[in-house]
Image (cartoon, rainbow, N blue to C red; front, side):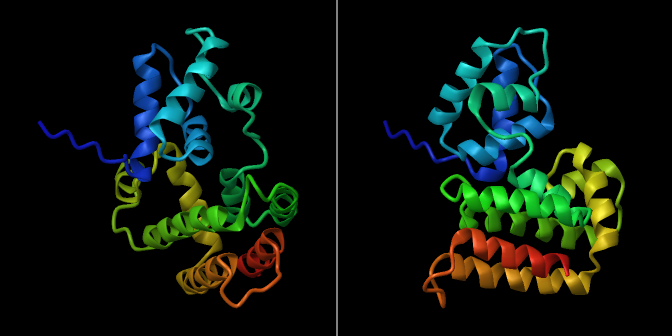
Length: 203
């Protein structure tokens, strides 16, 4: 007998977490699922361990939210990649700078390589959104691979970022991803790279 167990692809992890929590008799907000995905990656053993620790402290009649995640697992509900995406999507310069300064002070948990990968996914989906013929909530959610709840954020961000600007942003993301990995960069820290990158995204 040969048993092959391939790792779950990262884009399937949010649904896996949601299904697992439902199987335990709980419900969870979409944003909380994404926070867990960002923090825990695609290691299913790690995910189940952290979720079980979380469920011990939460009654079954309460929907798990970001406050529960922050209190029981330690993921900040205010300073994470998804809050950064929202701030960039609305061009909230003050909020972007607060989050980036937090990331710079906590480089181990928020290294540029990981943050840039998440931002690439966001801006790539935003670029695709521009070219959707049917931008209705459910159709757009299916095409972009996001929960329907998030479609309005892409709609709003698309008005801030035309396709030409998005092409420039995708270029900047590739350049800074290489710099974060050490190419043509001898001494600039992860935090400083993110500060430079977000400035170029916003302006």
